Image (cartoon, rainbow, N blue to C red):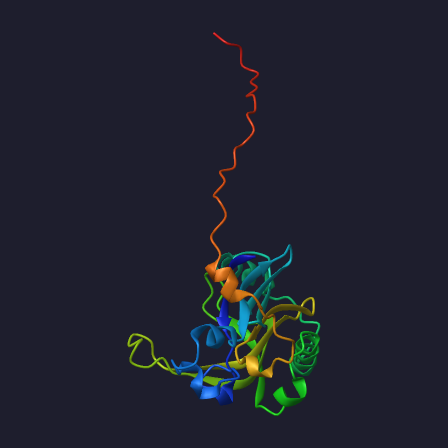
Length: 225
């Protein structure tokens, strides 16, 4: 697991206050600080990488699943050319059906999500040295839209819209490639809560240990001169 951390869980209707037993009084200094801190709901954040998949967790909820083949840069530089001219085993309707099945498998509320506007698009790609773009058997199933407002604190970033949920499917194998759950309110999966976050923050780091490589002999077939 890389970059493990945690964040305070909020609910959409409770902002700008975190969800606690104290409500908007969470900032009231008359309430003991220890009690207010321990009332916060702390969710794990970080990434987990297995042999075949990369998982991203944000504030205790699964936010991304990505099939690992190559790094994204290498994947788009190499793998897309291999898909040119390859037939798809599915159509747009089947891509949508597969997307909802995978979303249900990770406890996304598909019934509510389906009430959002959804679209299915295939990737249009310009192969190296070509003048005309081709359609690849890569499907993007998008549900709903989420508006991102960065405000004056990030003046270099412009407001943008992104799908609330996106599923990428490879049509040649019917396999899931990527899943982005940008709006975590659609997730019904139980939160991955860290119940002793405050104690972990206060705990001292263990003594640093330096790993030593075992001494190995170097063999050579060359004669010493």
